[in-house]
Length: 137
Image (cartoon, rainbow, N blue to C red; front, side, top):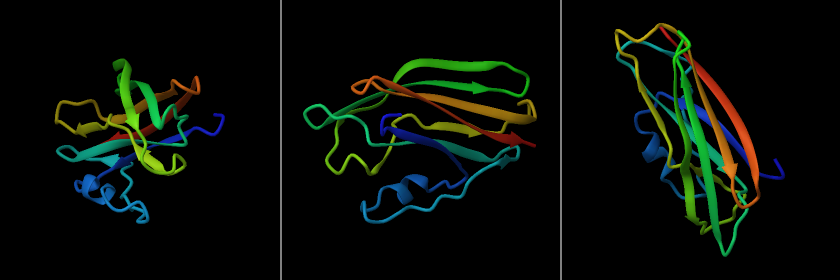
């Protein structure tokens, strides 16, 4: 969307933050989680690149929606995903402050769980709908 990009990464890496917090010249490698078992924990990372800057700062908000296999959805609208200065090239990849943490509980409905995030670059005035899913077995 006008140069603004984003994606969702469901990962089973419990050390994802350590992998992320490396020098910008290092590209972190994450284990993608597509299937989750009861008791397993995953994190859905929201990543973005090339936000519009004003005086060196970005303003990114998002809507989050998690849809269970039975159709019940949890929604959170207009939450801050990133607001503040960007101290490096804006074309680098940045991590949103909104990370969806999921643990498969024994009473959770089995099947496909859908995570939707609409990223909004408020300075560029564009929205970017993103979707990923995983299966709870």
